Length: 106
Image (cartoon, rainbow, N blue to C red; front, side, top):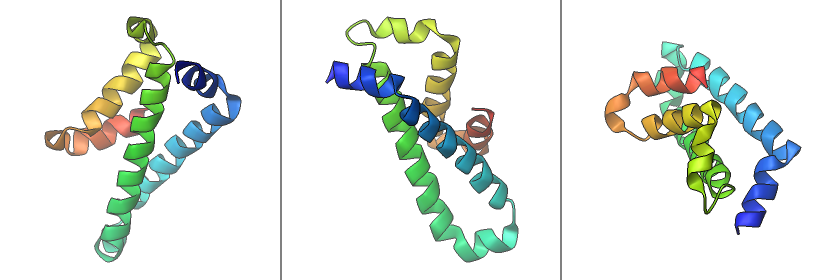
């Protein structure tokens, strides 16, 4: 499993896909600023936000597992720490709009 995670996390297609989802997430957050659309499509936006969050959790888990059994090596890279913190923050219900801003910063 570790070898699969390592290969996947280093795969260019995997990295481009994650980047595409990050961009799509930014667009989604931008669209959510339209009050009329939020009222009309709130259920869809909630579903899409949940799907994006799930993808980010899986992505971090894959990248973290790629460093097993020396997980601490994952945290030697500042970008990994940043990404991990953003994903962790997005899981906290109390984070609210701060988590949204953090997801944009990613």
